Image (cartoon, rainbow, N blue to C red; front, side):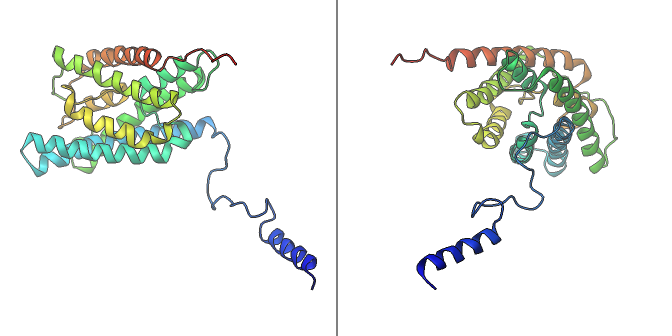
Length: 264
């Protein structure tokens, strides 16, 4: 066999092994093909992801109070579980829906994309937000069920003090600044670690322990456990979260301001 014949023989074998594109790696069996997921899949990812997040927050809070009476250790357990749970959920569901799990993130993305830029459309936002709220409530009920608590029991934890409301503004503004700052600098690949780390830190440096999420806030009114919030405190928290989101977007526009292109 000549050198030319040997080369042709090797190329034929390679074609038989990889008929769809030479030696390029092929998708793993069951992997999602590189195309835009349908809206139903996105809605399901937001519902399931938000439900899982709330189950982690509420469930770890219940577990912590059963293991220790030290409030500091309870908060440490609650925040640690939330950090790991949130990071995993963003990593898993981010490629499907963007892993918002949060109405203020969805609304902020819609606002930034309203003039034709990348981001959720009005139709997607109208589906995402109800899915997030329903998922959050289901997550709280699931956590209560796992620990033998009443499935729905309105929280008695009043959180209406002014300093707590200020904490929600700060927590939400920081979250929006982080997410959209990463987007502006093309570093969203770090979102699972960065967002989870921020929420874990905000548990400790904000007076409200960083709810920063209207859907999660609503759901935590359904459980009278460590992570709960009284229904009477919901309106104030959600209002401050919306204000914090607006402040966060303003900071993004200021800090990551796009300069004029340099003339050649």
